[in-house]
Image 1 (cartoon, rainbow, N blue to C red):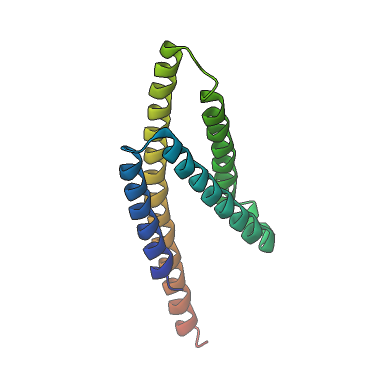
Image 2 (cartoon, rainbow, N blue to C red):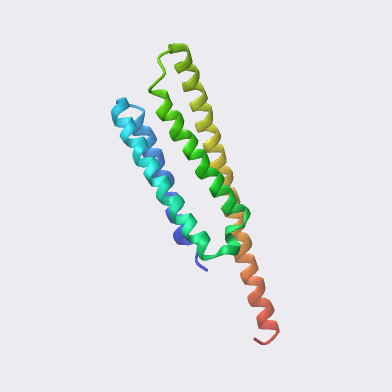
Length: 143
């Protein structure tokens, strides 16, 4: 199996995320809201694709990775609700605390993404090793 394409896609999406975040830092809240809505649509699309893939392979849907994707999807719903609630807040102290909490959540999400990438690397290397071993065993068995 060739893992280059999904790794290239992951690298491309990380670069796009970085560019989006850097651009957002200087935008108005209205423009930022549009960017958030687009990001939410992208997450929704990715979740839908993940659910479709999971339903096509029911055994894999029960895997730890499928569960983690479902948990991440629920987290995105929480983020969207917090964003919607934020516009109703008037208290400056509460808004400052909300900003600090959001920044901490963003750092946690980045840490999680880093962890997920390292796990993807390990799982991919394991898959390559499993395939090499299977082919080695098949060759020695004369298959």
